[in-house]
Image (cartoon, rainbow, N blue to C red; front, side, top):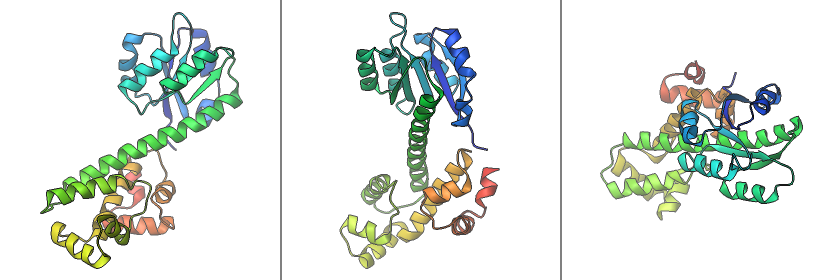
Length: 252
């Protein structure tokens, strides 16, 4: 079972929060409410302690300014997804919330159907933010372990692969990026790193896969698809040959 995304609600209306907690759409959409606060000074600490991935902020003028709350949240952690909520006819506040970084604005009373629609978008955004962070982390972690005789080349390699998150990189593709033909690039790469480009890239992708699996967010078939493998069986085979363990063992 996937871990549920954690939601912090910023609101001074406890009755509104109690009603939200009763909605089944949260769990159905992969979320759980972890708490409520209306204290701007404690907002960042609460988000960190509850490990919030989504903040739902209600506009309660003049007591709560949703624009300011969203700005504070995004300044503290740009990856936290924000949704604003408030009166139906407060168009100026809506506009300011979107500018501050909200992905959507819910009007009260909030319907299950509308909330589900917004949560679907929020889940996609949270997932993408997480994958991007884990991709960068896995790349840095792996390349730090690779010895390279040319530090500038290693910097260029890091920059190149950092921009290839959504691309399946072949040796030909890498060679073209660096301005060489495939054979010369292969020899040069092996000389500088002691590895073939294909071998290095495959090992990096398995480090990335390990991070995604260990997070508990994704099933094996989902990670296989994310990394562009033609089948789960092929992914499992490559993963085991590279790491010595099966994807299922990592998830446990």
